Image (tube, rainbow over all chains, first blue to last red; front, side, top):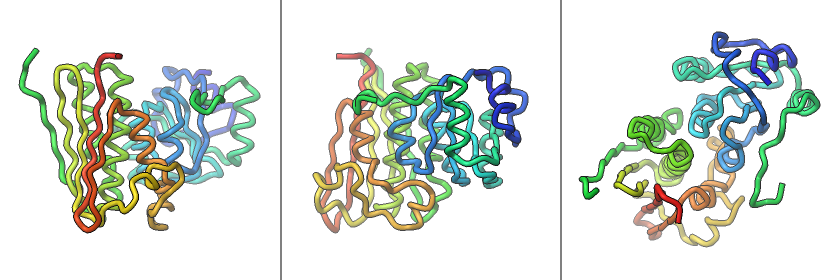
Length: 121
Length: 144
């Protein structure tokens, strides 16, 4: 799904990277407030959904080649996080819905989970 | 073949949690510039990031070094912290001694060392209580 369509679907606010929305295609997503797990289980190219707001969220996404982050529950990322995302050309989105609802909508529209082969899922 | 290895090294400052990942970001940029395959760059980046975090969270700061050879790279993290009393226990997923401050940032869930091992082709930990810890992880550029 093209990121711009996804933004419309979850009625997200775009804090930075508006010009990149048409060039990013999202196939799978990983939702977590635990960056330790994101580092262990998120697949490259996934969309990250989280309720944490610090700069490490953007760094974690950057390390794993995750192209964009959705901050759920209306959480606004810290200024330093948006500044870094802007520098590295990573669109930052804010969605008012809960993690469950946001993930549910995306799943319903065909966005896939990150497979974790060594755990059989 | 036989070229001098490329070395990059950064000090990890104690207590500066917002800076976690700055050194790893620089490593990642270097590896991309060197034309290393993206999956290898990603694995090396995760190893560096987890190691950088460990050295800061548990080691009270230290050094992070990356050495790029012709056919592999090595990430080394060293600190003069309290050391790991039981490495086997520390390698278990979910075992953690991280503080609440770190957990509030979304880290310290006891996934770091197992994740480094998962991303590395080889990993060694040299640690002694009261002396510190040195971690060395290797990523090979060719399979097999």
